Image (cartoon, rainbow, N blue to C red; front, side, top):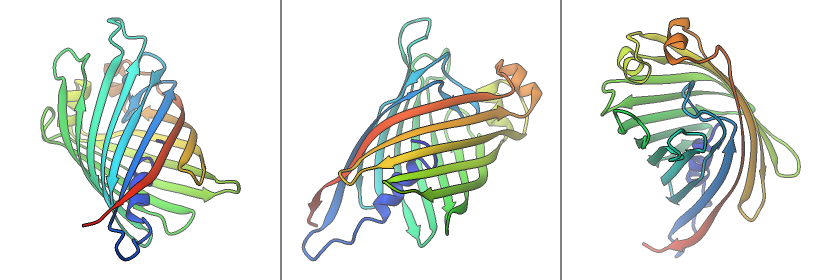
Length: 252
């Protein structure tokens, strides 16, 4: 999903309507099918062209288990699957503040060397009104340890008529030397990149939703761009259709 992405789903779980006496714990199920013009991860292009990105999740109160994959049909070996991600997150919300700690496992079936890693992440979002701020953090605990990546910036969330909503983010990211050395092959610490995005979301009462979004990424350091072989500006767009619904109440 587009920004705030998983925070939107997690926040909705954290804000679940309090159960009536005897109802118990809500169990939420969701799935999404998305098509992206390009798979871009933290400013780094990971696909050679368009990518199909299905996902599914299962939630109970503020706990969310998510599986996500990206298929690049232009891979030379024809394998298609370039990235898979499994995430266990715990949403915490107090008024306008949302905190999303998580454990994330990445798999790269087509990688030449390292084929998987794990991260501990913590995403913060403060959205008291249309304008807010966010701060996302990730610490690599396996392949690139002690790699660290963080992104912070401003967010805009505007509810529109007819179940529509507008989301936007503008931010900059920072990465330490282990992260850049592992993922970009360069020993450099400092500002990693910048990103700007805009998304239009439609929601229906039955749990269906759709997202149309676009974003522009840039790796600011010329030395890093040359090593990765990327252009100064990396545009991408995403179209997705999903479903998120509370199915049952489980009594404790």
